[in-house]
Image 1 (cartoon, one colour):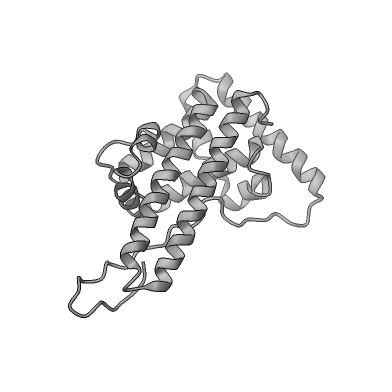
Image 2: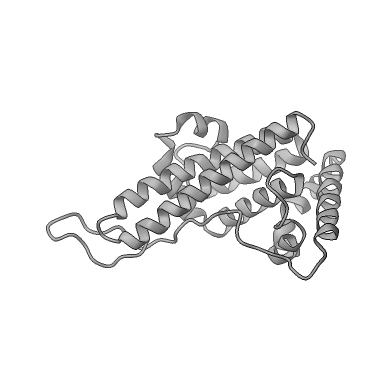
Amino acid sequence: MSGSGGVPGGPAPRPRRPVLVDPTGDWHSGGVDPALRAQVAHATAAALVTRGRASADPAVLARLLALVETEGLDVVAGLWADSPSDSLPGALWRLYVLREWVRRDPATIADRYRQGLHAAPVDDAVAGVAAPPGPADVRDAVDAVLSGVYTGDLAVALERAAAFCRVLATGAAFDADHLDLVDPRGADRQTRGASSLRRTADELAHAGELWRAGRLE
């Protein structure tokens, strides 16, 4: 978080670190008929999940996991970012952006996760992150979550992702408390980020419930 001063006589300010933002992002495809865009989003999401779950080839799974790296975040956003959270493309979008977010800044994510795990032990257990988590551990955890979409129970994958976001939200809120005196604006941004993470967690959990009920399309 930002902030270069400190409280006289108090502890040294915490180092500057990136703010955690809403992993749903703010991506809009624009310029395409909404009905057609929705049709394409649902078709591509269903095809991807069907292909992945029908194949036992590790190379296929590796390509599916690396979708954002190979196709680009903007391309994936153009397909799915406008999809509602209670749809299959909307759920996949959140999972892929979560993975990309962790992949780009695993050290910060691991730090936030460590701050939140003791206050959210149940969610930590569901998320299944190695303890104490380091950068490689959080990367491995989100890879395992996304792999579960194609090799396991998709509802479980969504529930694990939701739990992961809840622990991160807790850690981000704690970090905002630490920053409140030395960087009020940074603390406010961090608080908003924690709120966004909690919202994303709720959306992922709801998508998992819909999948179990056979209503996530």
